[in-house]
Length: 480
Image (tube, rainbow, N blue to C red; front, side, top):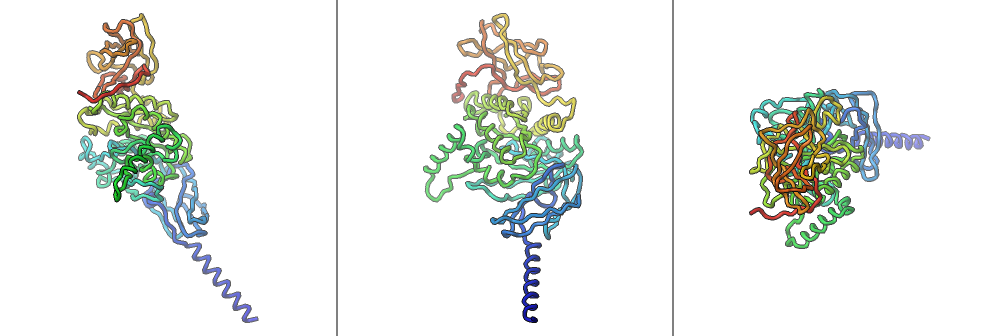
């Protein structure tokens, strides 16, 4: 009998030892689940990572008494959704033997795009002064290291930091100004996840599996296959412009981190394919929303600023494609025709860009009233008196406004499709457009040159967007 009891004792000891290993299993988590992070308030926030298959995971948030339990699956993956309270902090989060500290609960936004989103605060207008004043410990910044991939990455390099001059100096100026405005107005912690890459294309930020399902996506994938065939041995064909590269490298690892929405500044590297941009952009937006599974979260984007591109009209055509993207659900567009630099593709005034993005978020996402969040956007046209066209707008605010003696950048055409400079006057918050050169006009375009800097605003001094009333083919050619 003693031998039998000895066997039982050994078995019990083994089971206790095994349970202890399981209970305190070594785990790994992605870089953005860490000290200093911001979790989306009043949300089922995903927390996930990796461990040995079958490992036990225990999560104890510092804001409640709930102890969340799960086990790693056969691949070693685990995920738990924890309920977050209203904004506040700092809190801790105990995950097995690890304790994450200085966690805030607030509003989380992804900030993405190409170089104008990447543009650092210290390089922007009044950058040195702004950097010195960037002390907001309740604003947290995550700057993802740039990476592209042909298969999805599991993690990215980066870390959450409190907003200080040292950290903010190299952080996205547009994202910082956006987040600062939200913080001042909402008085809650703000988390900004910055994922951008100068020179990148919209297709590079889209899942290639999704690209396979669209005509535009198939075109980009076919061009990439041709590139692979033409790449000399020993060289890597992939880069940050190729379809899916940045989605796999940077965005996929972030999903499904809980977010409120996205701000986006990109398009310069798609101007020569402007005819495909509207659909390509919608594909990307839908792709992100589908993968996150949070519904149609807000997606606010920046329209390109004036710039002297090598082919006429391409910049204006891309801006018009962006305007047409406003019919995508829960989107908003910031116009920058008045704060660009035709000789510099990186205009230095990022403060107004960030503030204008915040107008959309404050009004449409957070329900702040009495905020005019957009400049005039083309609504409709009507031919009157056989020689004039009346243009109506959405977002006229307190009324249309001309900054100058007369409105500029309007052109008009008849059935011959030849556009002539036009006279334009404000008439009861509409615009009457005409030209002595066009007796029977049928179409109007506004700010349809690459470098146009028009002077039509609403009374709140938000500029009108590029638009055209026609759907004719846009003929571009190298500039003379």
